[in-house]
Image (cartoon, rainbow, N blue to C red; front, side, top):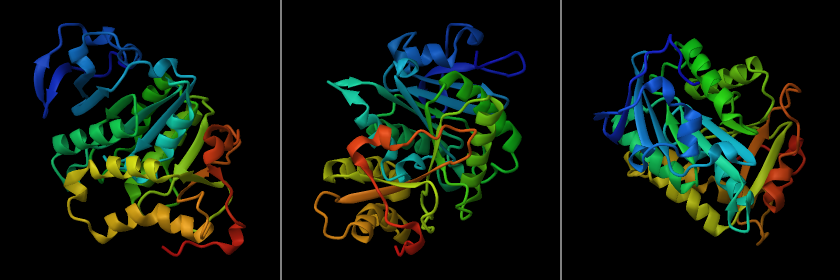
Length: 313
């Protein structure tokens, strides 16, 4: 069970902002597993609960995550973090489809509602829409304090431990902990990997470089290509976060143009690679070292020799 006697939990349904009617069942009988499986009334596709003074929020786009042949969990610090990954989650889910059947399933966890940069309920609504555009099955917001992940590290780690035990991921996607420009990103990545290790779980652990990750390409780096339609999906998911993207700041323009700039940097003039995303695999032997190319299929793109490439975006 996700909840225990030491955790104060109060479920609600019919989410609108942060007010709703109480559910008519005992909280301890509802688990994340049954929620993902689609049990309960259709109107209960959105739930919120009070956990030790925080408001956690669940949204289910479609049931079936727990039964996925490949389960991907993408964990970010803020709403829109998943949309900054150049579409790695979207490509993995798309490559996992066979004869119209969705074999690869995606759950997204945001640690905070981004309250330092806007109304939490607005930003969560945007995150629901953005992750749905990326074909996520389940969305969770843990309700921690934006900008305070380091101070709340132990509690974040414990909560992620509970979620990861229930989600049983094959692939976990995180912000790159080497990107020191945003300490919340570093904190959530370290908390998640610690939770995996202490749970004795060994999925593939992949890092995306997110907003400020123009670092030198190093060991474990991999590329994945997107065509214009896939890039359009990623842009749509990002622009769903309209409270952050309504004004096209230099940062927003930079993020949106990065896959095109990378394609030109690594494969100039190649019509088969219109857009290029880059990630990094955690090479710690405690985690799976299965090649990510197996899951990316034809979207996997080799990168040039690492010692000669430094991002110039």
